[in-house]
Every structure is written in structure tokens, then in C-alpha cells.
Length: 413
Image (cartoon, rainbow, N blue to C red; front, side):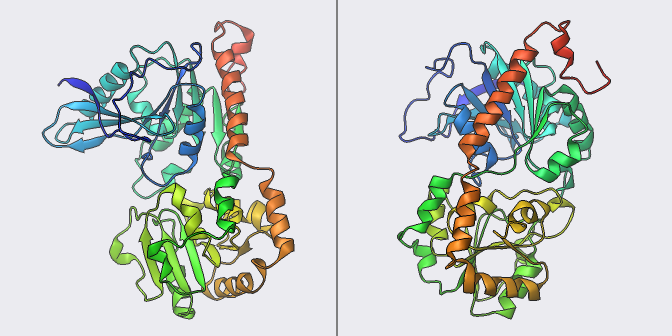
């Protein structure tokens, strides 16, 4: 079956012909960065979006999504460019084909995409992408371990084995939270913890008087807000219990629903599902929330979660109540920045405390701002970029060089 490369879904500040991706004003010696992601670019704006948008300022970045399956098509790549100059690559594959044929098509398509590249670094967000990239020859390999993907509902059985293989192949590994780092620190000699960060300036605008979004304007106060994907990690029973216990409180949920039956969502007059919002719009919603929520279930899929929304809520000036998720309790709970509760009764009590004290507390606000002064996506990206460059320099040395073996796991040299 043939494979083609197409230009589709153009996104950016204005519609225009897609530029030749080989022609850029970036430094000529900087290799391309190929991010292989299990997330789609046009979903919740999170860790890969922040990082790849910043890398795109210095080198060409391809954001390769998982394939889309369609009937009656020839395998091809959809290629678009974002306002941040990230090239989003979407493989389109025929629906009625075997897994082996699908893998072969993906291999051909990625070979076509990179055939004119002078060199490229692979940035894996998912170990599953190893299955169709082994035939390629990156100059360096980065594994950004964002989540415990094997614990997610419907996770492929091959995931743990592929992650072990990726750990062996990676030049540098990043962990998306302290608990993820602790669980993997002995599995690679060049692993670093990079918990979720925040674009402080963007979310801090929520502390100003902003226009009320139309779909939220008619909702009464007090408002308890949640931002994020509503999936198996969300404690729906807790949300339902809080809404039932305090019918005068209004629960506002922003974000898409994934991997759960919409019929399982709690339905009450004071629960409002407003759907996914663009990243630029989020401060306008958070500006009118009285308390922000992190209602994560306590299960295997949340054991290592490090919510990006925690510092975003705080930057917006929202008091926060969360369930006892490890990477929220430490450091946010221990520092008194986030209230922690698990049962409906305790959660209601902590929300009442947040409503009565936190938002009007200068002391709480000073503690929040002190913490936020030490974190930003710019800082996180800068530290990551330095480590990638160091790994790249090491990987480009001759393999017989003693420096080469220092990246191997202890005992393998």
C-alpha cells in the first residue's frame, strides 16, 4: 500500500500555504526534535505543549500523534503548523488492516518525514512509539516519563516491556513528578525529576478583574471549579457527594470526558459541565472561581499523577482543595498551600475553610507567590534543554570513547 505526505489542518495566526519544513531560520547545526506523543495537540494544553513550543524557538519540532484510522484511504501523514511553529504530524491509516501492516505503514511514513533531515532527536512521551521507530537512527533519545501509562484504563499489555526497552535506549530520562522519579531512579543513570510547572504570567491575569465568560456568567456563587480531563482518575462519587451535601455550592467542570461512560457522570442542578476551553481562555474562568478542586480518585492510575493544574490554580489566586495525591500532598499540602481531604465530609469541611479564610488571607497569598517564584515552564524547559544538549554531545562521541559508556546503566559498561 502506498504512503503519502499531505498538508492539512493548517493552524496558526492566519491561513497560509504550509512552508517547506526544510527551510527555517533556526541554527543549521541544531538537530530536529521529534516528539512522539500519546496525546493530541488539540486537547488540553499541558506538559508537551509547553515544552515543544519552547523548543520550537531554537530548532524544528515535529509533534507526532498516534494514528487515526479511517476506512477507504491510503496511508498518509496530515501535516499542520501551530502558532508556535510546531509541526503537528497525524498519521492516517486504513482501518481494515492487520497490526503488522499498520506498523509497516507507520515506519514508511516516518521515514518519509525524516528522509531529508540532517539529524534528529527522538523525544518519547510514550514507550508505545518504539514499536514503529526502531528502524530509524536518532542522534539522541529522550524519554519524558509523564505518567504511569501502564496503570491507565485500557493500557496495552506491551507497555511495561517497551518502557524497559526505552529505558535502555534513552540518553536522558525526565520524570513528570517526584513519585515517578522515585519509582524509576534506579533504572537509569541519567534520570531527572521535573514536576509540573506553570506559566505564572498567563494564569496570574486571573487575579485581575476580567470579563465573565458567557457560559459561566449565569452560574451562582460560591463556585467550586475543576479544570482537566474527566476520566477514570476523577472521583465522581466524591463530586456527587459534595454537590449533594451543599446544594447551594455550584460545581463548574472544564475539560473533555475520556474513557468513561458519560452516563456515569453525576447529574445534579448544581453541577455544570462546560466542556473543553482554549488555553488562552482559562484565566477568565478561574478569575470567578471561589475554590479550585483536585478531586482525584485513589487508585493505580493516580498513584504517580502530578497535576499540572495545581500550580495553575495557585497562580490564578484560587484556594485549592485536593484529595491526598502524593505529588500534591508533597510539597503543596505540607507547605499549607493546598488543603487535603478524601471523604465527602472532610472535603466539604476543607472547602468551607478555603471559602472562609484562604482567598482573603495575605499570608496564604504570600506563601503561594513565594513558591511560584521558583517555578516556571521557561525555567523547566531551560534545564531540560541543557540536559538534552549534554546528552546529545555525549551521544555524538565515538562509541569506543570512555565517555560514551557513562550513559549506560551501572554495571553494563
